[in-house]
Amino acid sequence: MSDTLLDVIDRGVTAYDLGRPLFQGMPQSPNHPPFWHTLPRRHGDMVRSDGGSAANDMISMGTHVGTHIDALAHVSHEGKLHGGQDARQAGVGGKFMELGIHTVPPLVRRGVLLDMPLVVDGEQIPPGYEITVSDLEAEVRRSGLDLRSEDVILVRSGWGARFDQGVDAYVGHQSGVPGVSEAGAQWLAEHSPVAVGADTIAFERLAPEGGHSLLPAHRVLLVEHGIYILEALNLEQLSREQVYEFTIVIIPLNLVGATGSPVRPIALVSNGR
Image 1 (cartoon, rainbow, N blue to C red):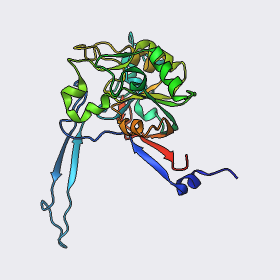
Image 2: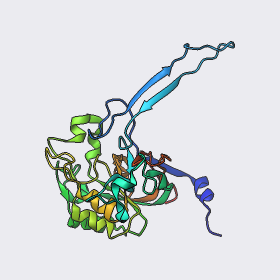
Image 3: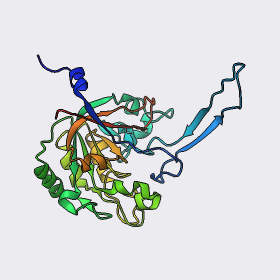
């Protein structure tokens, strides 16, 4: 009899947390509202007759802050969203009802890690470096991976190690940020993944002092091919432990009509692998 999922769990599963912590002042794209947290009620503000008390929280943030997933409504090109929808008309009423993040189901898929520094430049790809098709093909050969339809393909540049160094180091406005080229995005799309992701704030390459002025890979993936994008992933532990294939679980918040959602992706590996 074949193993059930519970059989695998009973034998032991290692979970890798691919999400970043959310805190005030965290590195993020300057294009989005920052994370903010406060306690509107603190312990002692109200004490019940039995001596009990409770605290609660309020947060505000953009949906593309921290580790997050882009819905297909996030990017348009020449006024059109994925499938040719009129972008302005689709957003009437302040919600994207057809391509918003609420249309993205919980994703439980095969995940693969393309560890690009191993074929490009050691521990960390240089600032502003554009990851080419040749680079991606070289990493697939090195790892022995086969890319399958409906995979989640994660591209590590090593830039994620800069997250703890603060905003300037991670956002890299002056230096540029490494990432996948337009041609590289097209190559990834040809393998029909359900989603792709990276350890940077924009997935694709950002030119020095260029910021988010040009995002052709977003157009290729979201608009032309309907492939979701994950950003600001923590891929360092997967790389250190040479975990290149795994089950990935990604659950967006059910935010009706939103263009994206914070997520805390988990990579799962059976201890008997």
